[in-house]
Image (cartoon, rainbow, N blue to C red; front, side, top):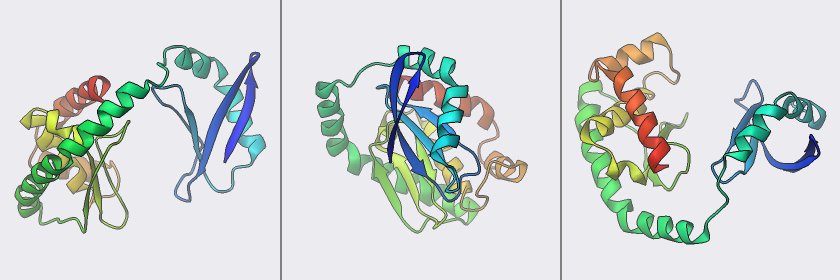
Length: 188
């Protein structure tokens, strides 16, 4: 569902995605300036507009830093994805075989995607998705990424137990987590 709100005289359009797992309203501003609001199913339009109005200053400031879509760049990324999707899948499968044997955790399916904001994710069904750009990561960050998502098969959260599981193979996970976030700012 698409909605529109007037923030300080500026008309802002945003997409609303209702999520049965969401407990609160979450605002995401994409690099191209697209605004997406993830909300619980019970959220009303009035509630969503109020949340956005409360965050008006942050939204306007963040949108000012965004870059508009570049069709040529999209075409290049699409081409890069097609060219490197299989290589990414091969790398992921090799790493999952190694870490899966250590943790005794194995995904049902593995997907390689052209994501713009995430390195990876784990679904409640036991499927793992990874960004094809992982082929550009140094080995230590690739190991962290794979171990992190694989550990979600054992712990579907970011609790102390989850991080203890990650630390079994990646003891310096905090340093790698920060480095991966920095790489994301450049590559995603």
